[in-house]
Image 1 (cartoon, rainbow, N blue to C red):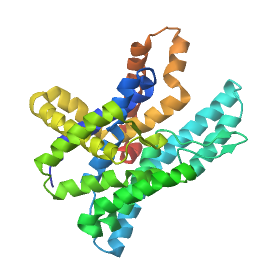
Image 2 (image 1 turned 90 degrees about the vertical axis):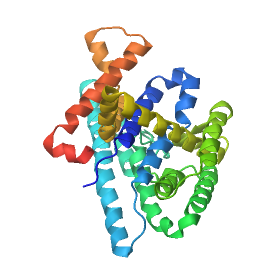
Image 3 (image 1 turned 180 degrees about the horizontal axis):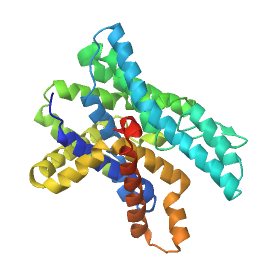
Image 4 (image 1 turned 45 degrees about the vertical axis):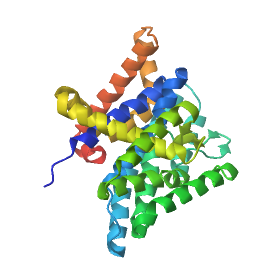
Length: 325
């Protein structure tokens, strides 16, 4: 059996920490948020692309798409159902009304980041949009890989067309639009695994990242691409820098490497718990019950530890573990 590459686990560990930082404190630190948003979600898609397989034949493609669905849909559905259950509990205990649980249930059926306004609220899927977008992107990569050297250009055209269409029709379902926007990153990950990347292109990507951080803005969730495709190349440069950093951590910082690789292995569970914690305001509610006031960063540390702790418990439940690891 091929040995697991710890470097990619470390990258995912760094990535999931950046996701939580961006969501919990990024709103109050715009420059930090801009730095993180410039590459952190594309990095997850690129890493997923590294482990994607090319087209073989029709039956194999159908089997792979089914495998992607079985892997990615249940965690998304369970997370959203937990959010619905929490909203129902709050409606019964704290009389917060029945609009939230109804809206969250419809969001599960709609399953997209943006949805129409309903009498119960605006439909919106939270952090777990990533799972459905990844399913769409990985599924489309399989037939796209048949184009070989044309795969990346075609994926960029598809993503740019989706971006333009979103300006006219900002609604999709099952994160289809976001999956199409993520397609170039998954395709790039698949491509770099099988082809050497020249040094000049690596340097260009890193320089583009620096330029994009200073003068552009990218936010996949809201379809914000200020300078497309500079942002795509910049995100690749940021991912490459994290790859180099992860190699250094693996070589020289053994304890840090073990901790980050563990977070990377548990990143799916952490992402789902983080989505629930964000929606339920669990950290704030527990803090309020205890009656302790916390500043911005202590509060961030508390919510981060709570999220990781709950995720660790989740991945150690025997029948649940296989859904998240």
